[in-house]
Length: 391
Image 1 (cartoon, helix red, strand yellow):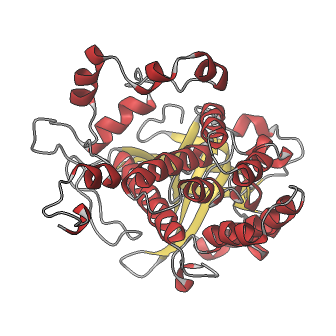
Image 2: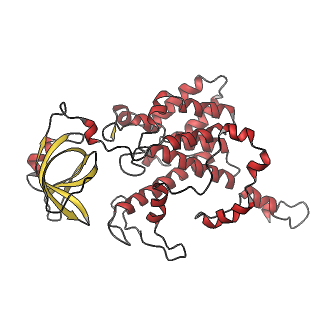
Image 3: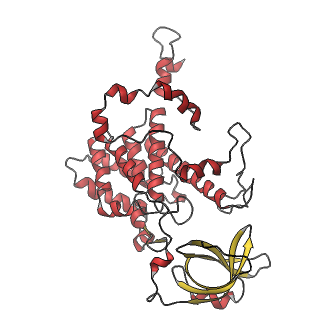
């Protein structure tokens, strides 16, 4: 948002991207707004004549706002005195949409690389059919993962799906009894329906289909159609893949048509929940003006610690995240393309250079661990004929 000065009086046109009606401590109603233009967003409040003003405009409207800028928790806030809805016809909507600060094309390219490595030919063909679907190809680099809970920014859906796939691959190493290809399929497909569930050209809203059907069922329907177009696609495999999507939320009360009944569905649900909650916490911490504890969060029903952790790392969670988002040099080399993998000797691809291995271990903030299968293989049997895993 352009520089707004405290005590500044303004008369400006905004796009209303969020609007909620709340009740203050005195019992009086007020309107909480997010007002946007191409320079960004600013919080807005309407305290006077709420009953008269509330019905005159809605989310997605262009409004002429007259009011004063105050400072609230260290950030500017517009206290509106008058709000007038404007006819959108003569208004250039591009002037009220912030330029893309993030694009999901890179994440989509990485997703495709991982999909191309899926071993099962039917699963791989199904996932590529989704990636090549015109609606997905056009929307995935631009779509947010939601309206405000997590990854709620342009390209956020691709970032979330990529993160869940990466976590799924780590889980597959640790739990080799789970099917690796189904884990990747569930990680990729679990939220892909949000490309059509949400509308995000001007501001993020649910489409009619999204409200009536929802992304879980929308994806299940598309799985059925695309599987039918793949020669000899096993019906039992279609059912397992569909279950991964329908059981995504884990519980009937959380909106899942089915609860997880396969190991892969349980793991996909758990990974998705982990990634979405971490993103939501970090977003809340980044927006909060305090140093150590956030304000009380209604969404999470608690205050969150956002301060520096008392270890040699000596950083807060937000600090570590900010560097990655600002384009800090990647710790690891970019993923090789299919052509590069074919031209590289297998031994070179599998074995990292020794001079970099120790540096990478020290630099990484993630703990290193061996897969469960490796630990079982290294364990020595305590008696002849006894399974090492039982000792």
